[in-house]
Image (cartoon, rainbow, N blue to C red; front, side, top):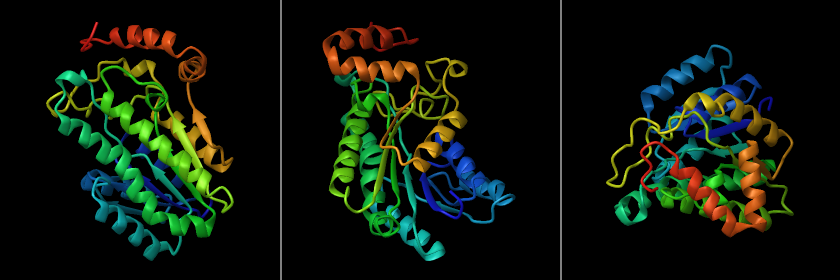
Length: 268
């Protein structure tokens, strides 16, 4: 990672913040992107104590022009882009029949279109550097999760987009990684949207029993260095992906029962 230019979206919290710290510690030139300008500036100040090549660029990835500006400012500052990590994301928790359609649109705008916009404008630089495009996806991109229709839809779409991008550019040296953490102790569940679009607030899961963002960041950084195509984390996640290939209808029932055990689950 030494002197590699890395853009990280959703860098103000959770996995994104942990990735920023991990990449900066490995000697990369890091560009931090997120909507929370104040938090972003604090992180920039923190990381600059040990790595002067850290820049904060407040941006909303659901806004195409913000994504274009993010890439332009990175290229202007560092002259190249080696790695784009599409990490920005939001989740939801509600039955589809009760969900306002604007909730689904919001998830697609951030999780899917944010990835598309940033990748579109960064791609010329990444092809030139034979660099890496990373999508931080989810097991929900392999198996539909009840109560998370918009989230699963956006992650399925992200993975389809990135897989196609990999195939289109397989002779051009572009590396594409789809990284799928399991349930991770991060802010994404606290900010998950309810049926009416309001924030969920308290996470329904026990944070201390989940993967920590720092663990996820190390695994993703290692996978980028090794130019892996797919990274599925946690034993539960690997089993879900594997069993779903051979026993999808059995997995429907297993997933239903597992998700129904969440506190205040919207279904039983």
